[in-house]
Length: 294
Ligand code: PAF
Image (tube, rainbow, N blue to C red):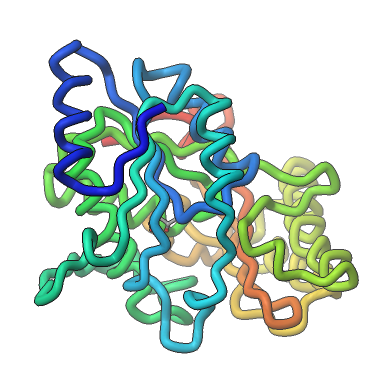
């Protein structure tokens, strides 16, 4: 596995891969890798000839009161995991490399970035879209992999790829969970054991709505209420929304198209998000699926 820190070195390494005719998969991350990231890397390894992973804690996607300064890091463990998973190229830029002085150009996502997390994290998706576009331009991957846990991020990135005609396909990989159901997240490390127990109520609440949906419940307010009733462990609920899985617009009335039930909540001082997909027509191929969209 080659480790590079500058865009210049990255470009040379990527060019060499291209010249060998390799199909390049890309997994952008902020490090502190867990099984969720491993699933993305494995998918890339299965579907591409070479995998590039980036680790960069992107300051432009953090609000002034968020956890940028304390975001967890363990570069040695991350490098070992990437090595074990057969990553070809690990890109570790610093902020001088990503945002040289006088940087002033950003990508402004549209409506898709407004609801859900967009309401509570102003500027977050502008930062995500900007850094992802920059990374795409640097790596020029054929296929890039994102986790379904960050549902709105996947929608913003897909919209950007379409709107700006970026030459990359986006694959969305299902959420990986702890054995008890908690969605994997680098931020889970912030939870005390007691908070960890309470955090579980988020996934369990979503699973209960999923069971009701499977049993035939299609009424959006009732499904939403079911989740809310089960969120006994959270301290502050930011949102619990049933949305169209593509546009992220709120579904009122019946769930008659692919939908997602999305929750963001604080447990102690840790902000957690999770979602489940509800598909009334499962026979039609997965909406976000492990599929590829362009
Ligand atoms: O999902 C993440 O870890 C980040 O938002 C990403 C896509 C690496 C951009 O910084």
